[in-house]
Image: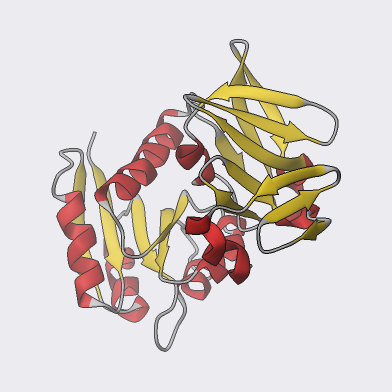
Length: 232
């Protein structure tokens, strides 16, 4: 099966990069590459699009506002240079939310999420977000089952080489995944503070320039991740 795609981004270089990435995939066909939502609306009236690559911060009409107003909504992957729109993007049931500049590895990860949705599989952890962000949850594979975990109950995530340990308020789960791959499936309430730790910033009880406290647990802040923490 071939999936029809549409790129909407006011930046020519950004459109070109996505187009280059798409050209490496045999089962995706680029129907058009548009510089504005207005231009794209004409394409959507004439073509059935399976997947949108939609920039958020555009002149005249934001990508999120444009998508909200579509009567027939294709699957969408939001692209942006700003982290601030992550929650809004996922509340619109986006397949993924990619920060620029977009590497092929990150692009391919988003494509795999789209393919999994099309096949109706949940072999990898999948985030499901409702209209209320506090109700978002994720499925993880554990003991040959897909286990539902509410994001709001996660305190922090710890890397264990090829596995991760998800620390909840009442229990822990261990599942096979790299911490970087798992990070991409989380929303804006989570921040990476160390190569081995992701924290839920809503659960922070105290912090210094060197560590974060979640209750009685102290988690170190890595030198390479201080920017992530100071920006939250």
